[in-house]
Length: 281
Ligand code: ZN
Image: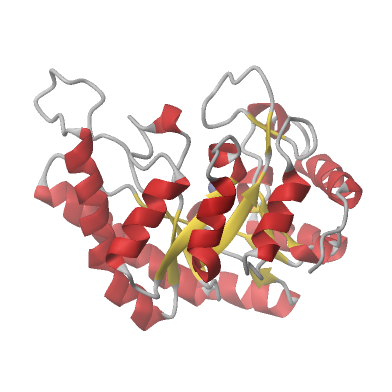
């Protein structure tokens, strides 16, 4: 596969500051990068936007906003405000999409005073998204809703499948809202193709890593592409066949790979990507 079809997600090499991330991606021939808010903050959004524009790299997305459920109205308002600020950052760096994570339960303990039921937390995600859509549209940024693996339902994402995310996207029915497909979270989904087809042009991003056993940290156990059981070429092919024209983000959140020199990690990403069979663009 051409590396120009891939985007280097900042958290794969999270120790690299933005300037080094841009350099690595440009020199190796990636099509773009996906900086996180934390990557952008040290230099500020305007400077970051200038650095990226001068490099010629695309920005596939900025990560992230969301985390909408909260036990109080104040907490929910804060999440909306933070997401609106993240939308502004995404716009300033030229990102077409802000990745939005739904958020988990405000408290994982039922007997706690601030416990929120799962159904109510899901409503709060819908309300939080709805409250950000005008701002996103005005900024020219789309919100990419990323459902996470069900093992994260209590702490990071009360939306646990592509189908559930697509239901909500259809309910809100707004051009500024779409879907992020991250294979780590949904590679096992029997409805993967159906939900890709259903989302169609509303797929705003595809995140690639791999599933390797054992899973020791639910967030940071992702495998390097090619090290596990996920059909990456098949997923890329599915995305292209159903109209996704964007870059494929290499997003390997991994204690194992974070322990390596980030430039060596980029070497491995580039080598593995080159071994993936080409898919019709
Ligand atoms: Zn992701």
